[in-house]
Figure 1 (cartoon, each protein chain N blue to C red):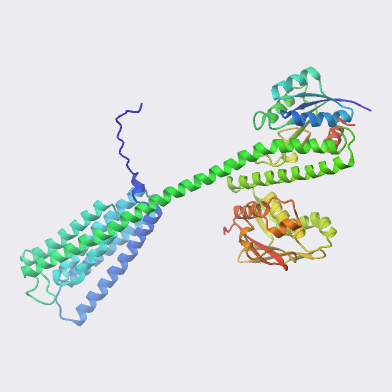
Figure 2: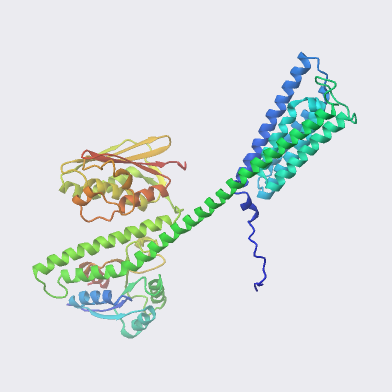
Length: 129
Length: 456
């Protein structure tokens, strides 16, 4: 079985726990960070193969800023990013992958609550497994 | 720095002193007064012409007609000014009305002079000006006007009775120079004008006060509604994260990622998962509902073919309907099914209504979708022959969180927000929804949307 390191950046520790259990059971190695800046640090230190990023952490769009920074750094620009977001965010805009991809190149949006099977499937797909 | 001895007297802002008036109303009033003046001029012209031809009364016709001609010119000027000078301020419009009234009074007193002075009961027309100024202006201005009216009238009749200016005889050569009669008339006229002003301004004071109170209450209500909306938004947001965590955790356990669980636990967890999902639906719909309220129609609307959207939606739902043995009947008759609108809003509306029709429809029943155009509008009806709605409950179905007892029996889980959301979405797009239903026979939800940019 191929393995990979996945970084989860999310401030909801219970949700992180759920994703960790799911991903570890599928054989992935999981590291996590509870806020954007820590997450960026871990990206440079841990060299994850994929990042799972929550949109809303401290602020309504902290996840977006993290994604921008990952993209603007040539060393991290190629790491696939999965963005998790609650359906119908309270910011009001519904994320549309086709439209938003132009200015926010994340690979995929995953809706909360997280369906574990879908999570594994999406992660594998984006890692090319 | 705030000085401690600041003037604490509460003063009402200028425009708030006239709560019934705004620039639009004043504008309309000015145009109305111009129209009225045309009628007055024509009436006076007709009457004096008739008097000229059919009687031998010898008043100053020439002067009357010149005056009426002059007044027509002035009235035309008023009209032109009003039409050209669009951006009136409230003060400017009030000022224009003052100008109108002052000139009308001057004209009336001169016309009265050349058409018989005190002998002509046309002096009663002054009462109109007293009433008008009481309604439009402040109490003080109204009393100044009544004084002005009495001054004009007394000056005229006193000058005539003392032979300082000529008198044009109407009926009786003795009456206009009879000092007792003249004084009596001035007194009665003065009292009449003052009383009129007194009564009218008194009423206006009450009306203005109550209007001010209503306006204030209204502002408070709007603010309270806004606060309710933002509270809902805040609360739903805060409620959402924990429920999402609960639901995600349950799903992971149920799918066996955290280890094996027995069948009994699976059943219980499935129930818990369902309830968490129900709560999440409720929160999501609540968020959408509050969001519509705090949002105007988006600018980036597109032309949507509603027939296509209906077909897509029916296709999506057909599997669920088939399970209940229900059939869809599409009766899409509208020649123009295009409306300029927001796709996702329309999808939500149709999804909700068709979903309801399936849910509360009869087994082996039908669900009919009917469209037609009328008066530049698109009508879309979703009908079913299901449980229907009790006539007592019809008024409640669009209320937030309302679920009829019968609906609860059929589908236990429901948010009670669906129809409320539908209604708000439709109204956001300047549409309307009507429901017809008979218990046990079925329901029909008919919506109407404006087309080709026509609003309402």
